[in-house]
Image (tube, rainbow, N blue to C red; front, side, top):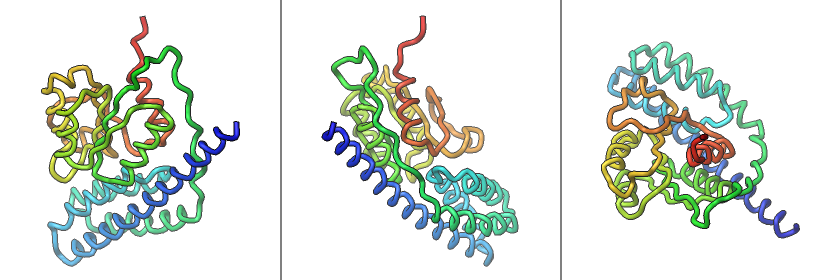
Length: 245
């Protein structure tokens, strides 16, 4: 029992450390968003695309902050439509929301779930692709420790393609917006590989397919970010569950 408690405490500590890194990443992205918004107000219309992308990224890591996520959605839409006044108003409220969230504890991590009955000896293989390394590590930890999966990660399109060509996966989780290769594009590449023929492909994004105008190949599922660790594990398990007869 003591050993199990020690293991859970270590898991909680790892998740807490990763949450702190995610919060640090949120601060960095918020600064980039503010800088781009400032340039847009000074007449640099090209900066609006940076505003839109930065807001989209913040939506993807605003875990447990629904109001901040909604404000970033508003900023993203307003930037795409060139409505600078709306961008400024939403950013002003987002600053207040983010400041309040800093003073609130995000809560403890969920306990590791038990392995499903009748599981095979081989652990299901999951590939996670995301250019935000803090989120990547959090998903790796949740799926590996809580879910009991064998997890590989990739932070770039090239890393993802190398992993896809190296071994088969049961589930492939793809961030929609990446700097060089998008999630839908990687989805199409994965579907073309014989060894990934049985893989379940999922796009993770703060936006809908319609909002992104996503091309490439259609995934098996499109999940809205952010997903709490326990919910992420639950959904991956559901993907792997045999169909009901």
